[in-house]
Image 1 (cartoon, one colour):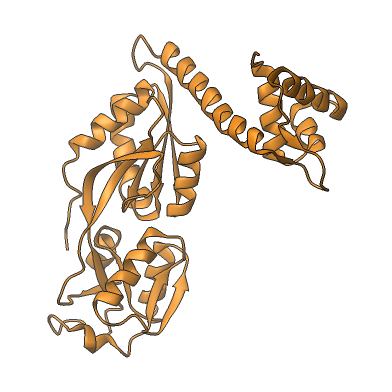
Image 2 (tube, rainbow, N blue to C red):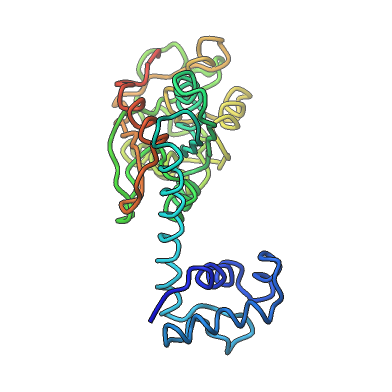
Length: 301
């Protein structure tokens, strides 16, 4: 019994694109050739990998197992190539780091800029998305490392807390509670809260804070992304709980104001996350080293 990597790659394309025709177009092959290669792979392994009985093909249980291991095989191959190319140093290469929306918008740009100053030969990319999007790419192998707010529960991931942050309540400067000192949660019962989209780690924390304050049933609207929330708050559409780091410039400019609430929301961890079974490239290891040196995310509020 042997595993042909070329046939494995073709099989994975069939699974990913949900059909032989779509995979053939992707691979610039004929459909019969794709089908034949998958059948020969099945014959070599003595199992059925694709269920062809329905209108839409799908992997069998054996096929799902093979596809999962296939992702790891080709991910490891990519890592090996990157490591061999960079074994003499960090003169060239590529870094892709993921970040949840707040972290990716307000922390990673300056951090990656510092990294590129130290390693000008490395091409750097940043993927920014909500918690679900970043974790999906981490688990699928598209991203090697990510810096995320909160603690992902997936057992395939390992994480290391590197920083923390706290949510603050923001309002338009003209809001009646601005400048009145600490307010109690009960003072906010009639306010409309602008919350991040479902799937965001910030949304989960916003809901937890509101529950802690006894405001779980408060009137609210869903807004996609921190920048949109800030614009809506500045326009007077409501108040919001948002990362302290996302509003430093806005508060300084006078377009937003922070209303202190007692008790203050609890801080949440900022974690470096990677797949448990993934070896980091030299470029990724250098970025991790830089991230560990940050120590704290400056607070100016």
